[in-house]
Image (tube, rainbow, N blue to C red; front, side, top):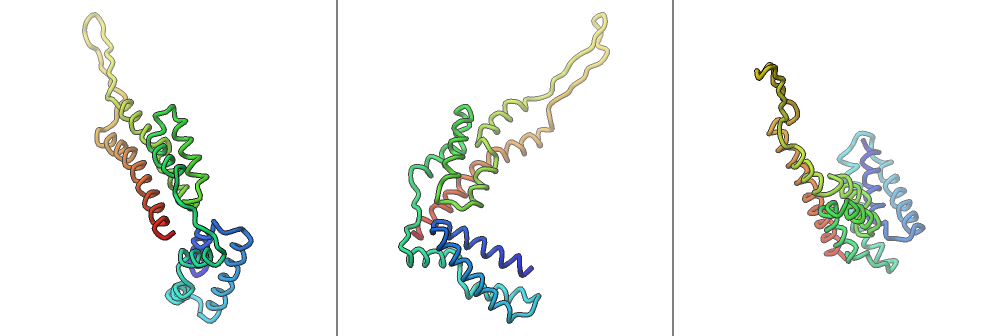
Length: 197
């Protein structure tokens, strides 16, 4: 448990430091890893609360990254046209022959504003944006019925296709809410970083 907590902290720190030059980033990460290791050496195994106290004393990853940027004279990447276009194309680009969504995905993936984790969330929550919701709505019409008759009498009638209405609405809700939530998530992360820049 201790290792997982420390690894998670160091991963978050590395994400925050991604705009530093690789050598500076490695040096800082190694320095903090050593500092945490020394502090944890004095704590008995199984003291999860103490591990969290050590990490709190080290500092929040975002604060450490901001101090490092100031020390090395590096400006944080600011949102621009690339990010705005990505936020438009991710939910709506699928309607442009799906190429629009792919362009939005590339813009998101190459942006310096979002972390790797945020990019993965942006790309995997309902790929294609709102297009799958529209296609699902059009294709989940209803039941298809066929009759087997002999001499004008109906012998049997079979209905297939269609799904329960509640299930169709649930799937449609996920397909609509997913892309919209993704955009709000990415906007909130982008605005949070812009406010701290």
